[in-house]
Length: 251
Ligand SMILES: [Zn+2]
Image (cartoon, rainbow, N blue to C red; front, top):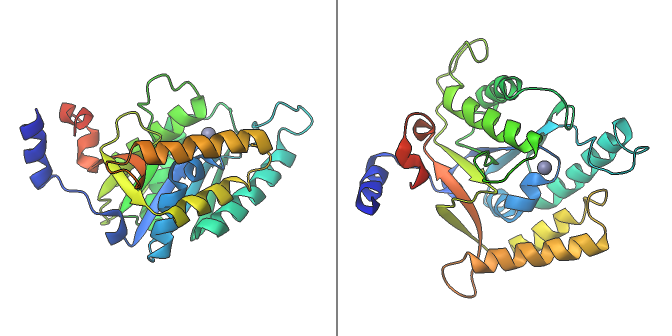
């Protein structure tokens, strides 16, 4: 299986992240991309890659306080995401504004992501891994599946009216249990990410931010192949492997 997988890689190639002109990060809530790939975003922005964030939901359900949820939380979280994105060097923020924990469908997400893939013309689409075992959050499942389907089918008028000549070269799943890419980042990128996370005050109090920072820093060290290095992890696939390709699991 190992050799077969190696051979597949010779003709099913994916670009290095830094070789990209534009990447699109599709996230369920304002904070998901910062948590899982914030240091990568900081590094790519630093070398001139245009990083777009497309946030699927309005984030309005992210509190246990009934007085806060809904519109006022949506405004708070948009501002928090703007501040975090500014630290990481994100080029542009786009909001789809589906209701957080609402009844929208993955098919609706798919159409809107396809629309934006055609406009933004990214080399790579990043999104949460909908195949993460034990993931139960409906926004994460619908966003990951909708974005992955869009990355496979974005040219088809049935998915969204019109078509495009643009080619997406890869999909990069973050928050994945099946990483095949251990992307090296520097300490300064990790620091920017932790600074960005501290902007999401509605989501993390001092204590939970400390725990999260510890977990993410340790994770960056643990997954690095050499000691002293830091990485963020992804499952990167050529979009063609998103359909009838059992080898995608071990690719
Ligand atoms: Zn989320």
